[in-house]
Length: 400
Image (tube, rainbow, N blue to C red; front, side, top):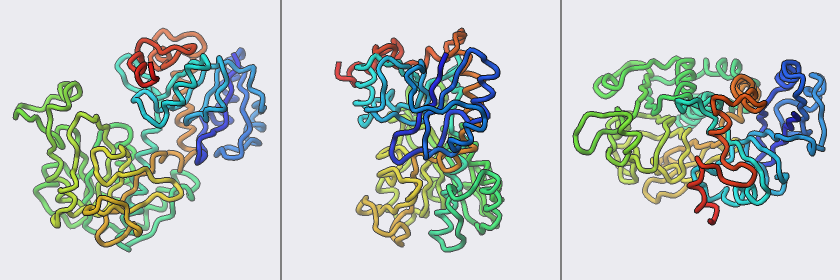
């Protein structure tokens, strides 16, 4: 089998890679029948020369490759008819901005395997950049907080060489008696907690957070049973919440009203309650002035997330009265927002190595023929130009 590692074509360019040079070399040694060809690119976090030095073939001609592997969405003109692709397509939730991409995939008889749906039988994901989104997002949130309050300045994460350098940078920050609320309990939240601990912020439980004062910086992490409750007054039941999110109401405001910084790491279902509304955020009693929305649901559960920001320009201001962006992200009447939607791209070498290890452990064996666990099958949105049974609901999104 020939696998092509394609160059990233989405703008702005993403520096991450599915496999590092050493991982490519190790794969070809482990599977002699496997040949990896890397398409040259000036934008990767690993240079073309690093791949050559590892003994990996580079070529602009990937026509012999049965499988094309990238990271982000492929630019439509670059799609090759009849091939199989692995990348984050952002189509399975009927995202309007990628409808044309999925139409072209169907039109060209392509097989699309989406990383987001590579799961075990228990639905847990086998590959993800979540931890790195949490790490960089929490760091960016602290950076925005320091700039807003003029208490410390951190370098942008993308200017740091790796995670060790990022952690070293955190030693300079001063958070005083700041109170930080964090929502979520998965990989993303785990990465954010890693950074808060590195910054010397102490964790307290939700009850303490609501009812106590502290002489140091603290954070509390909230699960769904903290920030929502049943409308009928019944006891919270997580499986019920996942199946019937519309039967729950928001319980987040008491925590928000005791916080200076909000780091959002949760998964949000459009049918579940919103965390905040515009009226909440307009109140003179609302203390939060910085929100790091790592989840980045545009026009979703947090009104201030009105657009994604970028690695180059990660911070913007939101006026809760006009509900529009402000010219100055640190305007005294504004809430400062960090909502970068490709955060792992700021530490691309670390993130790529983790991601590649997961692909090698769980996905490559399935691609090479042993998909007895159904990992690849469950993640296949389109097979040879036709929607698979699991994703048949996308027929209307495609246009019939």
